[in-house]
Amino acid sequence: MFKVGVIGCGKIAQVRHIPEYAENRQVELAAYYDLNIDRARKIAQKYGGKVYSSVAELLADPTIDAVSVCTANTSHAEISIAALKAGKHVLCEKPMATTLEDCEAMVKTARETGKFLMVGQNQRLARAHVKAKELIQEGLIGEIVSFRTTFGHGGPETWSIDPGKNVWFFDKNKAALGVMADLGIHKTDLIHFITGQTVVETTARLVTLDKHDASGNLISVDDNAFCIYRLSGGAMGTMTASWTHYGAEDNSTVFYGTKGIMRIYDDPEFSIKVTTREGDKILYQTDRIQTNDNQTKSGIIDAFVQSLVEDREPEISGAEVLKTMRVIFASIESSNKGCTVAIHHK
Image (tube, rainbow, N blue to C red; front, top):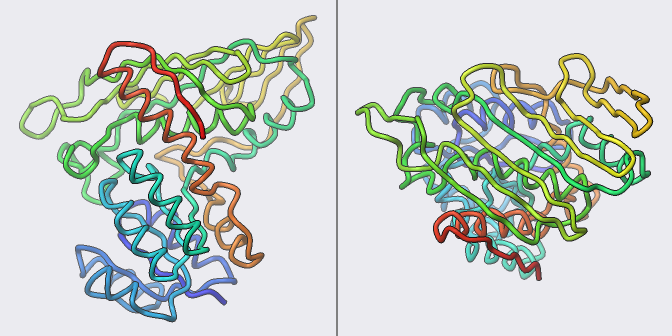
């Protein structure tokens, strides 16, 4: 039985981490910390465990085996590194960190301490994405020539534990990054996962088009991201992320191959639709992609716990997600400089 602590008890912790830990028989929810101590106390009353007065106090408890880091973006690296050095395994929410240097330091610390570092890139675990990867590896649509992937919804105003136009997602001091690090990071990581390739070049434009804070000013982070990616295998495609899709959420991906086209989560009935070059249609019903309004079990917690049980590095490790973070920061550089940026994966 592994004892787990949750650092940051906001929406993502309450919707995903805490209830999914509670359902897992291999762990015990033993520790909580939040800037709002009353919030942490209410959760402890419901699920059991102890509330700590600081992150340092929680990490100093030798009985805690692992922690989830569910705080605002800018504190991910500092808390994760401290936890790893304190001998805890770490599951960190995305984005991994807000600078590439911090991401690299997190991976380095995990390696030096021998503790596991996992990042919550849950789209890798969606059943249609796992199936799509298998089908592409089997050659169903041939070699990938191009692709497009999109993640867009109406914004995080209702997602935060403190909803409204002043959510921390819109505050550059807390979030540092906008929709690119909230949604674009998922679809960038997904392209790596499904294709088995890496993005080696990006031409990007990150902009703030419509989101306003409570004072009526445009928010200080990007609300839309438009990227053209080139993969290590030669294919090119687009990745778009938006907080201004004021309608049905779009979380679709399409691959155009030499033998056909594969559409993923692009149809209300079939999670995967393949049209072959000859015109044949192959349909798959696996699951429905979760949305902000319809949360389903992510699988992230179970995957993290299973890595602890089996004493092996998680598949969605910090080292693996570091490849995605290189693309994110290269895209920010591309947008700032107005040029194409090459990405060199070490």
